Picture 1 (cartoon, rainbow, N blue to C red):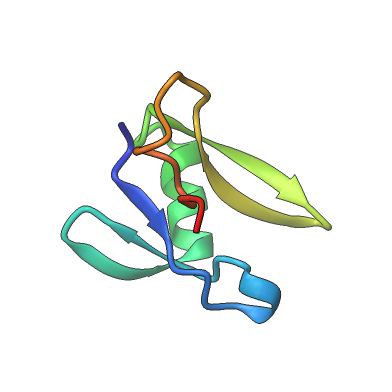
Picture 2 (picture 1 turned 180 degrees about the vertical axis):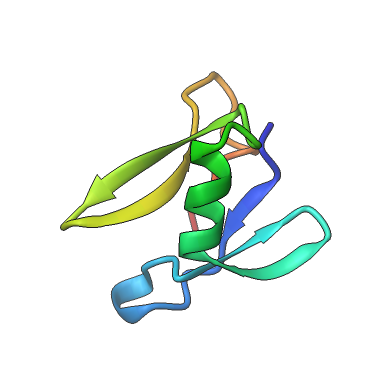
Length: 70
């Protein structure tokens, strides 16, 4: 479990900020850099339309996904 939750606060519901455990409103560029440094082993970075986003690594659980189904 990563503990990373998207805020869906950007245009079209994009995640421009994330909540990471007790840390709230962490900018996307910061969380992406942390993941690249290996600070969140349960997550990876994806590139969509030339922007990088945090994603949970695949597993059987949906409760730890960055974006929960609404």
